Amino acid sequence: MPIGFHLSIAGGFSRAIDRAEELGCDALQIFGRNPRSWALKPVKGEEVSLFKERRAEAKIKTVAVHTTYLINLSSPKDEIFEKSVKLFCDELAIAESLGADYLVTHLGSSTGAGADVAFERIEAALKVVAEAGLGKQTMILFENSAGSGATIGCVLEEIGRAVKLATKAGLSTGLCFDTCHGFAAGYSLQEKGGMDELVKVIKREVGMKQFRLIHLNDSKTGFDSRVDRHANLGEGFIGMEGLAEFFSRSTIRKLPVILETPQKEPGDEEKNLKAARSLICT
Ligand SMILES: [Zn+2]
Ligand SMILES: [Zn+2]
Image 1 (cartoon, rainbow, N blue to C red):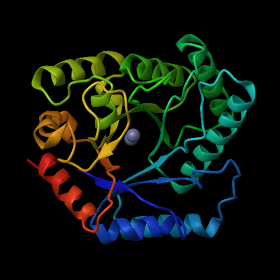
Image 2 (cartoon, protein in one colour):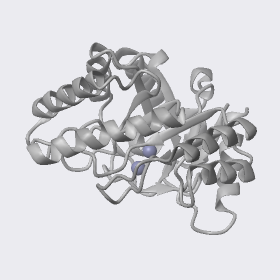
Image 3 (cartoon, rainbow, N blue to C red):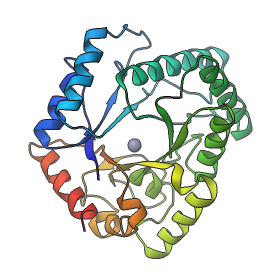
Image 4 (cartoon, protein in one colour):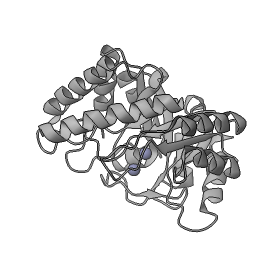
């Protein structure tokens, strides 16, 4: 199945394709813009065509764009919410112009205002997206979170609620499940019984067909720790055996996989890729 990394777009979008090709990957994830600034530089037409051309040459099957971390679609504060919706639309427009399959996003944080307020905001945001004519070519995937503070989306019931709202707004939508976040949020995906339960919850809340992408990461923090720290595969608390349990289902082994592992030492990418393939290609 398609497999790859979250890669840098320094030097242009097509540089991420070059890097994926060097690593022998057929999937990748990128940011659509500089992740640390609200300012948006227009994307040049030639950069877009080069990206598409290189994607075809490198036979990249899956392209995901991850939204940047300033976006908070659940914010109860008007100014932050409005800026977030605008940026979300801009990043979705970039993803669509690049021909990306998925835009992965988090649901943000209610900063104490509670889930119901957060979902009113999310519903309003999705309406704006639909009215702008976006969200038809690139599918919006809501990613589960590790659940620190007032984060929305650490339980799959909340992801399901967002998926239903997006569907109601006429958008194409689904789930991106992050193994590190799921484990940290208390889903025991490393055990058979836990996986039975997880699959049941995904089916009930989101639907297996709407489960589209996996973020494959080990966890530097323990089970149900509510802390989001990614580890290289086999070097964290989930471990290779635990990750093998997650991939024991054939429906899950069919999904594209993106690694967001730390990659600190030279050779880490190759090591993680080898570990990931050993889990999936059984
Ligand atoms: Zn992730
Ligand atoms: Zn994370």
